[in-house]
Image (cartoon, rainbow, N blue to C red; front, side, top):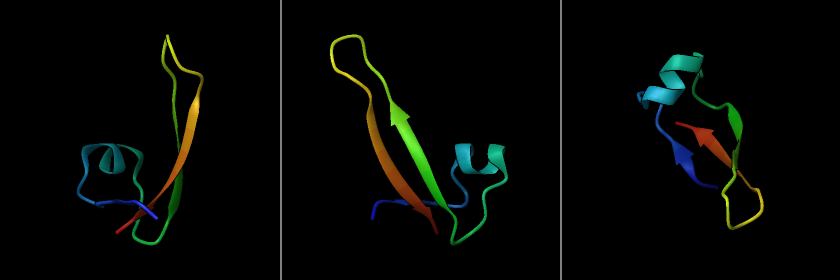
Length: 41
């Protein structure tokens, strides 16, 4: 599973803590939405 550092700006903004799993949704004009999950480390 991809990781996101606890020191990442997005993780800090949302107050995420180590061990949490986050759903990340990307959307683009050309492609449909893409969903991935990341574990905060």
